[in-house]
Amino acid sequence: MRHWVVYILCVLAFIGCREYQVSDDPSLRLAFSADTICFDTLFTEQGSATAQLVVYNPNKNALVVDKIWMEDGEAFRVNIDGEPALERLTELTIFGKDSILVFLRVTDFGPMAEEGAILIEDRLHFHLATGATQDVVLEAYAENATRLGQIGSRTEIAGDYTFTALKPYILFDTILIGGKMTMEAGARLYMHQGASLVALGDVEAKGEKDKPVLIRPDRLDHLFDSVPYLYAAGGWNGFYLQSDQPQTYDIHYLEVVSGNVGMSCVSTCTGTLPTLRMDGCKIHNHTLYGLVLEHVDALVTNTEISNCGLYCVYCNGGKQDFVHSTVASYFGYTNIRIQSAKKENTAAVYIDNLSKTGEPTMTSFYNSVITGYLSNQLVLATPIEQYYEGVFSHNYLKTDTIHASSAKDNTYWQETDTAVFRNTFYKYKEYIYYDFRPDSLSPLRGIGDSIVALPYPTDREGFSREFIRPDAGCYQYHP
Image (cartoon, rainbow, N blue to C red; front, side, top):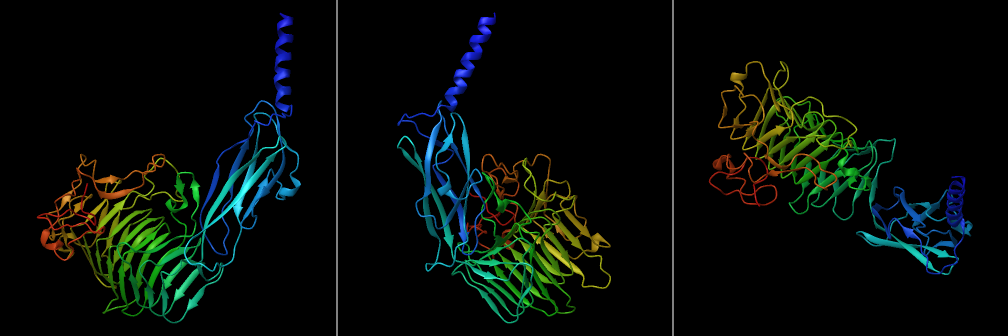
């Protein structure tokens, strides 16, 4: 028996020795966790997050890397096992079945002469003592950007300001615009952590279906391989429209995503209120509120307001009409924890008509959708609901039957309604994100009022809704 034990120990010792024995076989190669490291698009004067590369020796014997170098070495920085200076990494031994870890990032780079995204490439070379050379490709897209403000300070622009589509903007901290704010079709605003955009004057967003105006966080990298940071709410503060005058807000195809507050339109006016016109917009994935309307008259059409930790829509004071709009509250409805806050036990829509001193609230919904994964998604807070003057007509509602006399021809959620939208649960492993277009068996189909739909012959995506009975919401079903 002792002989067998000695034999086994000798075999294990021999195998262990082979792992440390340096090979001179010129056919052996290293293995890499990726042959190309791709960084997300970067902006001038900003670096990247750190990426990792595993260099693995799959062979039984050790291999010696006698030289590691970058082909260009301008845009990328490398750290290997704690050593940032590659020229010091000589005679680096990688034992059999062992590996080393390489950290890579893109450095800050200055403005470029070209406009648009430019591909930056480099190669990281590994030369083995046996004579072979292997390399890994490094790629990043860089783009010029206009920087507004700086971290830790509020920036005030007294006059008018136009966000153009020529190149993206990066906003730091609070940017306050005192005059008229104009956003051209295709304008892109990337918001740094904690940044806010505040408009004190008129606002005109000239987005188009194929060239929307975009306001989003400035993190373009990934939280996990299949989860971009864009899917995590709270990446910036919010977009605020504030006034003590009856301003005009004309907003078309604006997409506001992944902040704390999507768009807050609040005035201190009495009598004549500011007017808001929203069409074709999308407010999505915010830790607090989606659309806040206080003391403002608003018309919201063909708009999606979805996935907020508190109310998706909050109305208090003024007359607000929602036509062919979708309000869907599925914040955090997934099996992966990516949000910094949980969904509170709040409805998708809260209509506050309880003020005794402010302007009365008269909010109406036509051919629209109000739903979510909680049991009650519409709260109407008013002294006597039967006499509330807002209208609810030809909507799909997940709520108790509204007792207002002007609530008619609505379709109410049933437990059998399991296919309202195409996808309400974020399936990150399958790369399937939320999709609030109607499913083929959706109860939204054909419940809208065709007379109401006449001024809006196409949906948010441009599909026709010229049918005898159009679908409710901002999207018309199409295969």
